[in-house]
Length: 177
Image 1 (cartoon, rainbow, N blue to C red):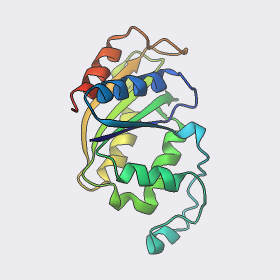
Image 2: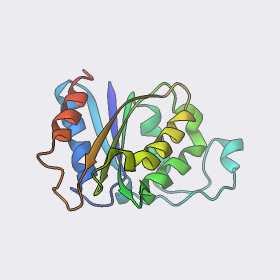
Image 3: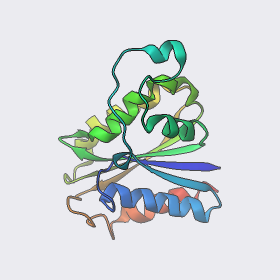
Image 4: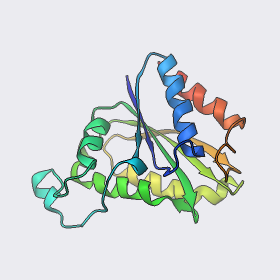
């Protein structure tokens, strides 16, 4: 089984990044093939809305998104992880989602997990972010959202360490084998 964590965090070792690592660690222990994609470390430009991709199946932009989409299409399980900025997903995750347009119909029959980190401690405050991620997966043929992991009350790097979500996301990854 191929498991990919798409990390929207612009910070290496940020709280969302750490949750990705925990999920992949569990999946790796279960015998899955794992990979993390750090969107913030890859040059991806916003969608031009030119819709050339609707005719060609390829984006006119020549950046890192082609390689990312190829990996996503050939995966089985996808974790989407994003910090929450102003009660929404971060810009890196939104660009990734928008740029999926070129091949979104090929991202089919995938199991998704979401990991959300935020300074706010209230899960209900994360609803706009979850709605955006659910909107994305609703457009993907056969997509199933299996679980959501809340890393709330996390502002500074390392705030996630020791929280119960660390064990929960590890166990979810480990259950994939």
